Image (cartoon, rainbow, N blue to C red; front, side):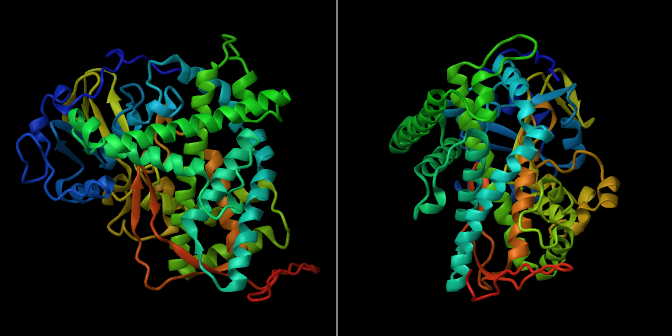
Length: 498
């Protein structure tokens, strides 16, 4: 669906809230605001999302913050977020950390401005790559990469060692998107350190976030060395992708994956192709967004499963019942893991790994009948707080409970209260890919292991535009065999190795 144009024209850099919110003074802000500097007292620059969540609890569903002369409006109330989801009045706003990624991702699907034609072109060309038939084609490769993970965890289980959950999930999801989308193997599980692509990616995400916490005129001075590292990181990402594309062109095409679509497919109506520069930007977008957020979602889900053995047992029983003793579950069997999917959704509710999205007014409007907005005025939807709004989720919204996502509970909730993938026409194009991959992997791990948590561990969340559990380690223990009727399948028990 083609979006209606935004009448404000091309963005002209950051728009502070007072330019678009004529009654800004009605919106609460933190106490102890300092002239010129704004709301900076006691701020932790490394955790801006969690800092904003603390303010949200104190200030209510619409609030504002000011830093170094820039004013931001945050929204997290379910009623206000539902209003912002109205595509006829609001559209995606590319701002804050997302705009800071444009030096590397440019007009890729995630970072393109609404007026840039390459967004619609790329979306129309690539959308068939996430059809049901395409997803079924990716499934065997997802299984193959997951097997490399379980081989790694089997060795840890046999030795009684814990595993680095975020690190291993990052390896898994990077290899999955690289192989399914681009026919490339980074060899992540054969490395003792993260792949240099991952190191460079984390560097660019962290730098993009740091830019939000430094006064713009002083950024070149205060972030001089960080800026040089960021330039080197971007150069490495570009070089990696250029080599990947060069290798594909050298063999004359692949198996119809995302890269083939980027290189060869023309728009069905206009006959246009993606330019070489835009191909590079789209590949980087998919490699980064296609693994960073999914690895976080899996990591949070595994944390909660290990902390709630009764929920893990219920999910594991479903896997055993639905998959039986099959060694490799079929594509259709993954969608039948409804409770496992609820575990994943509940993890994404509490800690959506893409923790915010921005919306801007297409025209003069009034947000939820309360706050006037001019064209181009924008607000940042704080997704972890939207997902905790007691008006939508009840007074126990902080509690982990996958049954919030059973069919009856979902039908009883207002629309637009669960937004881990954004909203509207610019919502994540790969969300079904991510959900299938994550549900498959959780099912495989639950069937194979008991997950033992470190009793001393307390969840800490690290922020680099995306969210990830910090320092999360679990000890996997191999389960006894699952035997269906007449089955002679044997799986090793704890301590027996392979």
